[in-house]
Picture 1 (cartoon, rainbow, N blue to C red):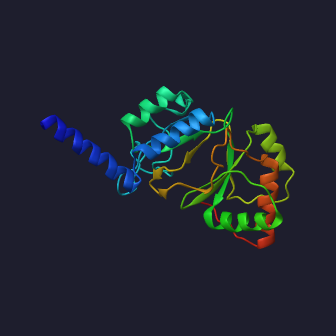
Picture 2 (picture 1 turned 120 degrees about the vertical axis):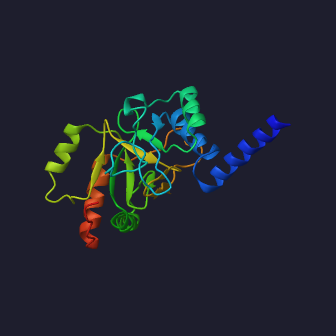
Picture 3 (picture 1 turned 180 degrees about the vertical axis):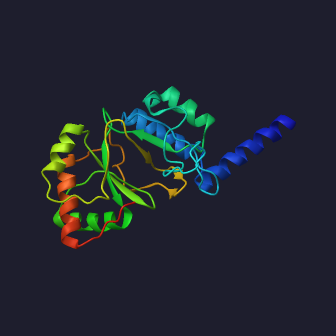
Length: 224
């Protein structure tokens, strides 16, 4: 009887975590979909506490609960057994995507500027792939690019907002439905259901369109 009661308490605890959005089947299912269905290498990020403070050793962490720590970024994998083991043992860990290589890269900008830029791009008929949204920043997923390609692209621009950030090879990005120190991560534009691998645009198209949209709409995108 004691064993049955103990198992029942654990199940109730898991269900409560899942309803609160801080772990449970939703996270492990999402991590497995990224790794096995889309072949995006992922790993568990370091969690944040109830006050939004990061569990990593840095007291001034700027991305609490939204970055890798132990294991490090190089451990990112598409192996289903490893992913399942990680999130079984750390059910509330955020899902961290290792960008570049076989996975998408990303271009991110502050949330308010991003929402207005996306509205402008929609009016222009610009096709976008998945867009990841957090309370502070939105990230537009793009095809993998190299530093040389990015450097040439930015050099050719007369103006590039300083608030734009680029998540390329060796970078990372927290994916939905992660909970971070700054709030929950969600899909602003979700991948199409059943996609073998979500379509993403070239980085050139995104940077051109975003810079043009920000310029045309007069959006001031502050550094964040």
